[in-house]
Image (cartoon, rainbow, N blue to C red; front, side, top):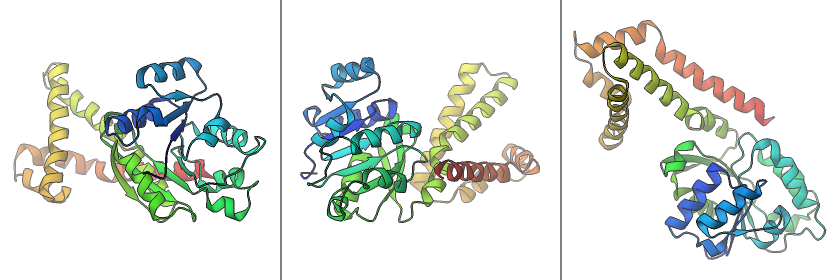
Length: 283
């Protein structure tokens, strides 16, 4: 990471804060080497007070001052942010910078169309772009991110991005950007599916006579434990499910209802619906 003296965050919302906090705790970057901008001055001041980071006057100034730039704004804000940077007088990329975007559905081609347009080919090579799809468990350092780099992103750039993202969870690199739509459907939207399951299991417990707090406690511990068991055992979900499902037992009765209602297929269809929506939003 020695090449990247300073990292700048354009956008310091929940996800930006999660990454900043993780980078400081893991000592990947020190607070003195982190710069931020945010549309909310109140938010920026809070971040400065809480994390001792530097608040920059504007996005173009941050871009000039930092060697690694994290685009952590909403997709609908991206065009304005990138245009502000690329139209500033003196805009140039004479020394290598790494641009990482976590804006959902905003393809690298769109970033290139704005930031690369005023640059010659040598300068474009100095500005590799990596697109990332994180998920909300990153807020508690338990996330997983999919990432993909453009043609100018070399191994060192990908390793640097991985070091940043690994501070808040697991990371998987993909060769094709189109696969980030699948990542969105599985892990980006995935926490919502798990919360949906937790809601349903809790409701069942309450209907069976449990208090809400005990139903939630039992459900959360079960979900966490099942995930940990699968990770540590290294067995497939199908194999572990069959081990729990004794013939004529309580689990078999429950799974039969799920199978009769085609729940497995409906969940798979839901994932594909999220993938298709991600593809639509990326156009």
